[in-house]
Image (tube, rainbow, N blue to C red):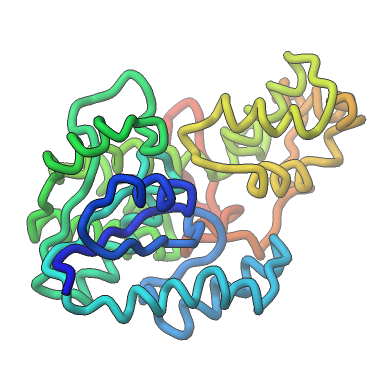
Length: 308
């Protein structure tokens, strides 16, 4: 019987972790809870129903693929009941941090009494903390100096998850600033999440404006190269090809062409804050956690969210 369970945030790192020959089972958390509607009861039937509807509608994930990739691995997690310690392996980006607090919320409810620890760099970093960028020696060092979460840490992560799933991000805006927990990257991730709501000035959020800015400033010859440039520039989101292609699909009316990448005049005007694109991009079906994306505006001058 193994005494340790490892939970990772992606198949790439799961393969890498396997090479370290650490004791214990490895489970991969195959979700992207930073996008689409979420509800608080992680792992419940209504939770997975909500997630499948989002993934199917936005990314054309079939039911068969969802069951095979996500639900089967989740059932494997449910069957891991005997381990004394659960070790979390999550990067610092928004994608990973939102998944992490959901997993902690699940563990709080379903694995009471288990020791939960976190592999991370504790000091403020100058380069992004990416697990797959660490050498095997560095990973082993980080593993042996991992942070054991206190009950207060677990409660903090769980409460942030509840706030993330609520229909307003306003309390999250206030509460996340008072981070006395041992999660070194959560405050920055939540701040980044709040910047995903549309801005007052042109109706696009920070990342969407960044997409237009890259298109305007760089001469990029193809859509594929454009996506790779965006992944590299805004790595703190943790987004991959799928997410950026989805963003480009929503912003398509602002582009003259993707091969090569060129904005049209409306795109240039929106980027310059001469035109506001909010009425054209607004949708009641787009959620960030539990909140409707277009029910709130981010005021860049005051760095505050406003409810419409």
